[in-house]
Image (cartoon, rainbow over all chains, first blue to last red; front, side):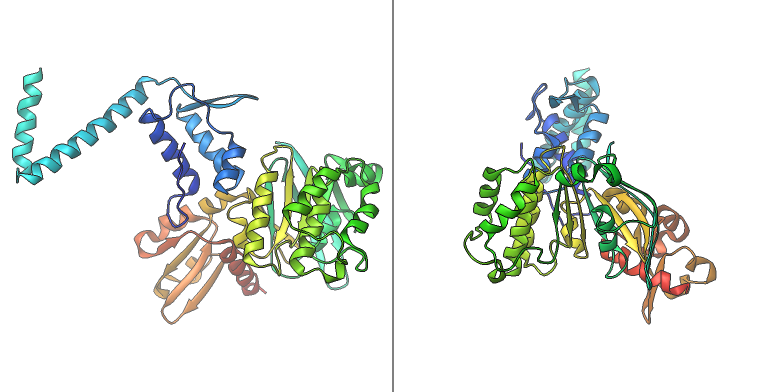
Length: 125
Length: 289
């Protein structure tokens, strides 16, 4: 599990950890059932206070990304519909960005791209 | 959460200084940084916690026990690091160990040797030849070699170079992997606290200003910057302390969201450092004298 912390960021450190772990779960790089390092282990490894990792884990748990078992640690949750949706959205976003980049390369305007999308979307129905 | 240290309404009066009604808790499994300027009561508070001084009124308990009946047991479970030399100068570290070891039932020679090695401490050199950093490491070694559950340190990083300060923080991080350890340390080098402290206790002029989770401070306090035309009798009341210059003002608030509502886009709001909080609290206290 890779986590990079920026000390110059406006985003608090616990939020940086939260969003990076969340991202890895949504991308399925961290899979359901997989154990996360303990809060204390992670705090030591990242050279940050225990309360920071505790808060990040609490947020992840609150939003259903992980669950914890007393005495055993924290694990990635089974994916629920909300999460799958969010993950799909992420994929869609990436694909759209690629489409936009390709359009720009050949000088396709935003309106033309929208028309194309409209047409394709209806065809699928 | 369990409290390892608990002070309730503690008063201690000296000729020229008093600790006023201090109520302080230190939570088990976390690091609490104890901040405040020079001469505001940090060392006195620590001495009270260590039973080197007794309060005039109020109660002090450590591990839920009182000193009157359980002094021996409490001291067994504390590792104490002073900022001054508490060793016999003409002895070597090996000799000093022989004196300290019998006092602790949990003394662990392996652990002692481990830290001596980690810190590259000479066992056969007289302690008076130790540098400030070596002295600190020796003191820490003694404090850590009897499996103390509570580590109390009085200004452990003052007078030390940045490299050793980082090393010390690393050791503290390692200790905190064990959820049964608790660290309480005073410092006025507040940057040391950013990466290790879970809670901050802030003392000023013999009174405890607050004990807060470190994130709570960020959420409540803010530095506010703006033009001086925004300040008047009423708006000045919103701040703990204000610094005015020809070009505008800078101030500290303990109610960030209220300031955002009052001033909105007219001011710049920034995250305060612990130093900012100390500085403006002092400034604000002077204002009302």
